[in-house]
Amino acid sequence: MLRLIVLACLAAACVASQDHCCSAADRHTVQAQWDELWHDVESSKLKIGFGKLSLLKLAEKHPEVKTALAAVDVEHPDSPAFEIYSLRVLHAFDNVITTLDEPEALEATLEHLATKFESIKGIKPEHFKTFGQILNNGFSRLADNYDPMAWRACFSGIFKKVASKIHT
Image: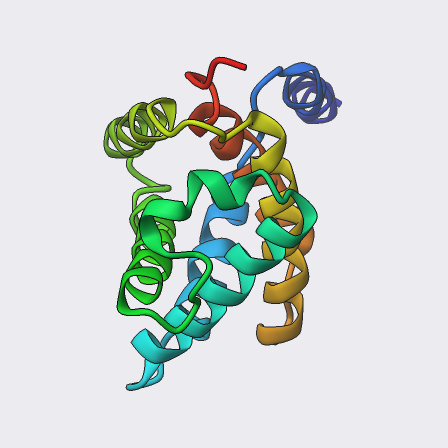
């Protein structure tokens, strides 16, 4: 009975938390599925394609994002600048996912990303929510046994942290 009470308290604390509740099982699932997605020898090309498509969908849903991405040549998706930026975005995810089990490293990574996005004019917190939805849709098509609950549990707090310094 005591175990049930402890579990109920932990679940309540998790639900009541303003941040996220990314359990050890969620972290393991996200890391394993991420590794599965990009294990191929040609994964950089796949990451570029997935990143480009995701960013273009974001710009389609929020046209004002094009202004924020003008420096990376969003108007020419096949340009080296946009392809490199797309790869950098997926590498940022790689860094975050790699550090999910290392709280100090994860916090430093998220702080660094929040500072970077703070200085980009035209980026709004709601863009991260939309981008998360785009990624969720894309990952669900790419990954076998995709677990949207684990990804949502881990990335809702991550996106919130990265968007935390953006002033609208």
